[in-house]
Length: 465
Image (cartoon, rainbow, N blue to C red; front, side, top):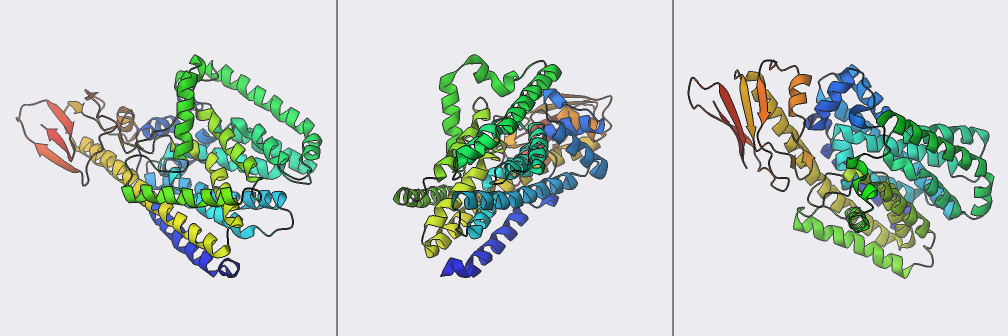
């Protein structure tokens, strides 16, 4: 049998992993947008940056600044290492869940498939390619460590201590971990004898609930609010219609790419979704336990209903990082119900589609970083005392450029512009991506002009001096 011999799976895994590492190449990426704001604050050892409550992420960026300073590749290397570590944890978590749900069956191969799909899952681009996107990765790492310690048949005092520790670290990493307790309860409920397991952990559940309340109090004490207008506007307004709309967007974007993706990749995503879906319907009686996994996936989406996700680019894909663990595990469960030769075919096809979209996303982030680097390089050599930015680009299909980080970039990089006045007169529309390759064009207006105009067009940055 093809999958039993595993040789085809190993070949697929080697090719896909190699391609993913090429796409994730940290040496082809640069700082973007809000990076400059947070890096400048990190250089001053500032916690709870910009009204956020993510001290674990703050510490990680501070450590990176100590090690790498103003070298972007180092920060991106850490992002990649964190993503690899999380992918390894997905393997152990998937194996644990599959063994608990299907005792007596060997599911290691499908746990490996879940971790492989997670590693190349293209909707992780923001968490891996954007330095500040690592908060989602850190949250997922500690969430998985918590679930590995908590969701098991035999629960010892050491497990209890580990689960409490990792739960606290998860909460201090990212808001995606707010739903960890319901997720843990759902997973335990799906295990044979789950009611007994839940009963055995009732005191731990109570302790973790108290910890969550203490966390909310500390968050309110520091930020003077639990949710700000950015994170929870539609929650605070009680706008059910928008929340449902955002839920549908998050749900759809968990299984497909953004609207402007190439048509052939969009078709591939549809097939990669439909083939397992058909098999799921046919084998539903065997896959009933996968309903617990789907419920965990939905629970993990809830903290982001107010924010939603971009349907025309990759902005907001960091919200899918933790939920995608359950997407990949659910897919692996379906593959385990297929005939082995079909499992290999569907795995290979899905990996191909994911790899293609990952390549597209990587290109957008590399391009966005290059536009930032080119612009800042020009500022270092510009002798004008006054600079006006027109049509400053916000993003490239969601890959942030300079929407709000220009002034802090100048300060963070130490560009000698203390006496200069850099003004942003207008921003480029979100849905108007720049064209590749992007050039720098210098136009000399007059020797006496004291103001330099930086005009961002479709294909070039035109500098009038």
